Image (tube, rainbow, N blue to C red; front, side, top):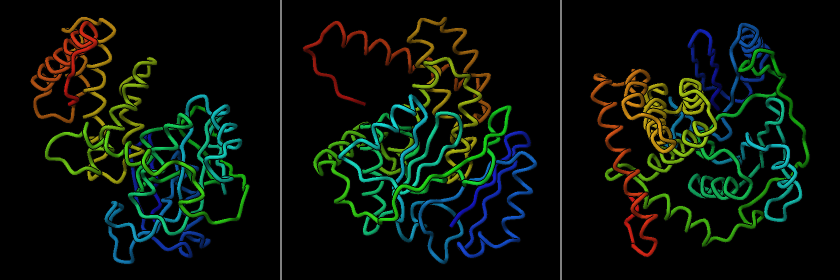
Length: 307
């Protein structure tokens, strides 16, 4: 399993791969509590890594043991919908990670990584969950430790509802619906990229656009995505790419001055060797996409290829 220790204040991120027995040992727990007390958030992987794993990538996963759903918007209502739904079985655990935010976990067996990710995307669509939290390498908050994201510490708690282990058949989402969702994601992928990488990139792009549209600062989103995507070789570099592009798209769509948008993109594109050139090209691309959308809305019968 993987433990991720992330301190937002210092920028320190530590990932330790260890057995469950090692993680629950007094020595390891003392180290985690030491880090948590000094400002670090504590996360744990949900699926079993291979014995020879040295990283936490999809290829390192040996077995899928959990399906999960992250609720971060209208979460109290969404949780009630999950608990009343006939499409999903009773959750094994519900983690309360902060006021009105939850992570729901089901124990599963006989499920592949692709099936788990497809299922999690279907649950996100059904219950308005977090689309960035559907990859099989996900880490979730570890109960018993404090959430350090806010001014006041918030103790992460877990409530158990079931001890059953579920199969894919317990989740009543039509197979063809899952296949359709996978097809749509694949069709919107960038050329030459692997499907699994593209689908996650597309979901992170959508996540960034949704939160930027509500007024969340780009810098906050960059940090959040970096925390979520610790499976990437350089999480901060990875997170700045979708956020800068999403910012340009959202800002232009709401009518911001293109010159100001370009300046702002260059300011936050520190992952690029030449931020000014990157900002100019990004704004130009997003202006072209905006024009295509406007043309499409004026010609509703015309058929455009989805890029």
